[in-house]
Figure 1: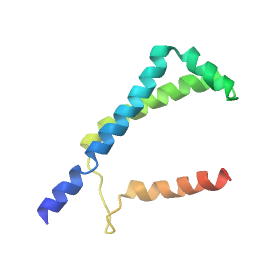
Figure 2: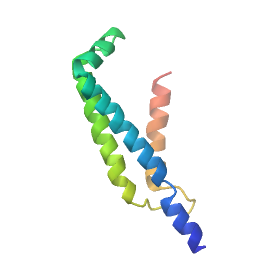
Figure 3: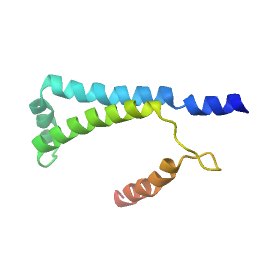
Length: 102
């Protein structure tokens, strides 16, 4: 039983590393090519306030990737069903986004 618990604690580490690195890599790519280039793409597809949204996207990708990587060293407490409390808390938000986009 102890081995299963140790495996569960480390099972999300590869996923967190991949997702965190992916966010940072995409944010860095936008910065290295120039935020104005990304803003032009956003404006071409009709995003309002494209320059503001470009910077907001870059900041969120860099900060979000760093947050995921920093959280990679933390274990997530689980309830009796094996789901983390944070996973349970995100389900209403996902439902709201799905329902509102229809």
